[in-house]
Image (cartoon, rainbow, N blue to C red; front, side, top):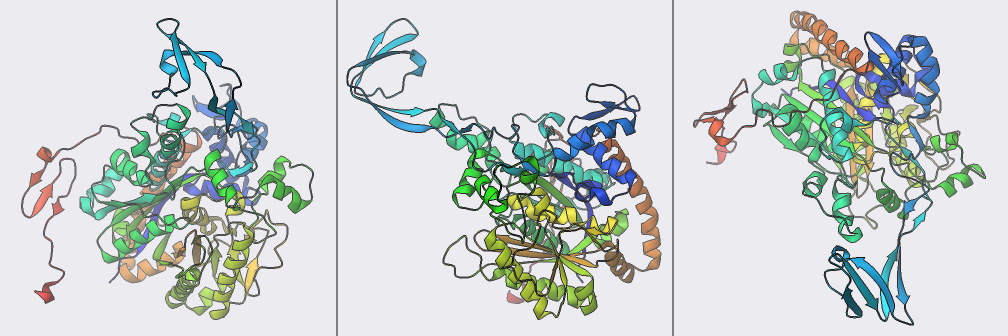
Length: 635
């Protein structure tokens, strides 16, 4: 019997804001929310970004003045909305008007040139055509004859000026002792903490219910930490005369999100790892978690991804590939002479007439449990993930070109939904959260994959959504965006429309698809399942099936019986109360990430080791060494 991996918590930070309790999802459908829920999300964004605060039982404005909520919201709502989702790149990331692009040159000197330098600025290897004359203890006169190789400092206007950026003013590193962590690590600490706190069950209680090695963390990103405090600085500092630090190398690794969660948030000694698969990275990690829980090896797994690629170097790399939406192409697309703020917000147009994807940053984490543990602890269940399918493309001409693997993953995902929930459910109560990058190639190839799958299974009008139109493409974390933001459909009943696409392109394949640029009202229980789809660079394809909470509850009732479910629901009421308390405190800006530095650090001498178990101080249950021989039939 397979354990069912159920979703018991989720959180993170994206251009739409905080993910837990559907705040990020709510930002996408603000105009469809009740005034109370809309105000909660606006206040959450305001305190997150420093536009408001909460002091002495009252909200305060940016200057610290107590302000009635209605007045505060009236004043800040336009700014909150303009400072979220896709928009023109802000100086917090880099100055689009002054992108460093230095020019190498050779100076041909007809006559000797004399200049002075500080002694510490002299190169280690003095060129043969330099003559040195000490002027003082610190100054050197240099006389140069012949040629001089130089690099002139230079700047240019960025050719790509749109991105999905975290809400303006949000600074995760100021919420804990970030110790020069790369931006991505700061986002990880916030995102993982948000997911854990959203569960409404203290982590100590969860950990005490299982053996330490029944816990897992699978988290990573697709390209590492590429800002100056990670691999970005490591690779460029020597060439620009800056000193490499001891942290840039280790903190640049792509598996750091998992490592930081283990070391400074959970204190986990369980299984860990970070799979990498380009845009499918999050779903690769989700697959590891699902397989572990289904097999019984793990009882609780935190899955995550965190990418911060909005740097001028990364953008230039993707731009040189022809992958990004350049300003000149956006102008041509709409026949404009100049791009306004609203034009930048519409840069990403999945399945429409488009010109490239929009890069983004995001950190997303999802907490999964086996169904029996969730019932035992009274966890609130947001859905279930029965399977994630992964297939490569086979032989390829170009490593970046799409291939055939995604047809296999989508076909298997649709087949699983049909076998679990029936043909009617697949046809009428499922939808696809597409990869939807907004490149001309993706709109054709992915629409063909989904459309052909729909044809094969007899689906006449399969609804397809594409969240990247709001938040952009966060690389390896894109699947996490799709996962965590899609869960809101079962709370509020709207599938977000592809609202930035005025009309869908004539070359897409949509004979059996339902593509809409308006939000679709399906009701909280209108959909039984979602298929998350990722088409990654290099042939990394993944499709995940996510089951609705009402479907999950039906399955749990059948497995565990009404009496067990009644006990579970009593416990869940307490869980929901605790979770709601965290949410309300977060809306007020009163919460802080979990970060346990130098906390309960153990050494080998602290352990009690026998040939049957290893006991760890501070952990409720031991690690069993009673390992069965899996190949006893071969002995």
